[in-house]
Amino acid sequence: MRGDEEYGTGLAPSPAKIVTRVMIVGGSGTGKSFLGLRLAELACLPSFHMDQLSWHPGFVHRTTSEMDALTRDIHARVHWILEGGHYETGHERADRAHLLIWLDLHPGLQSWRVFLRSLRHHGTVRPCMAEGCPERFGRHTIDVVRYVWKSHHFHRKQIQAVIAKAPPGLKIHRLQSTGQVRRFLSQCVKAADVPGFLVLEGLDASAKRD
Image (cartoon, rainbow, N blue to C red; front, side, top):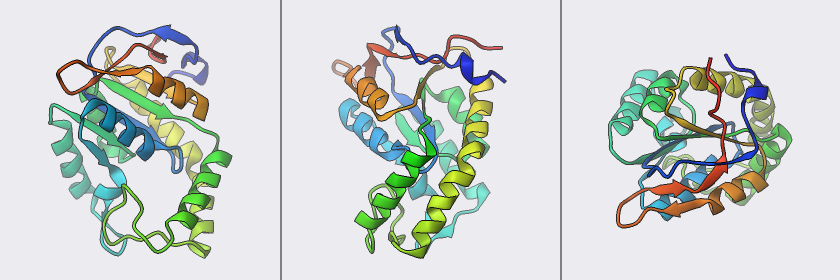
């Protein structure tokens, strides 16, 4: 597996290739849903969210086999943006994707965002969450914030494993701050006359593969 130092963070030109399948990964509160929606709006691509796929009403979790089937159905399509984990099919997703975006933010920022999200949407179903699963602000929020810190290493390890086995042609962008996310979005341009977008210049992270 490649070490962190092998993921570049400097600006570099990207080939002019139309992107129509995007995999967005990162822990809770990194902004995966926000980024997925923004790219979907820009590029006229359908967006899918793991939180919507994962839950039945009342926070009843779907089984692994159900999630496998749902994600594979999305992978098989021509156009998609899929954000979230379910690393059981992560390698398959990376094999089909044109672009993988890793939101690798500090867990302190993630925790603050999760806290604000819970407060803002308390009692309602937040965007990109499954129906019948309202946000709850209170003791549950503390549990979620603790989960952010405890799961930070887990997500990084799982994402690094996916990247290590990804096909050589997959473009990978590791964004480590809100500023880098904004800059990345500013470099995404809608493709002419067809769904998809071009990354004119990006935070390239795919230079070296062992």
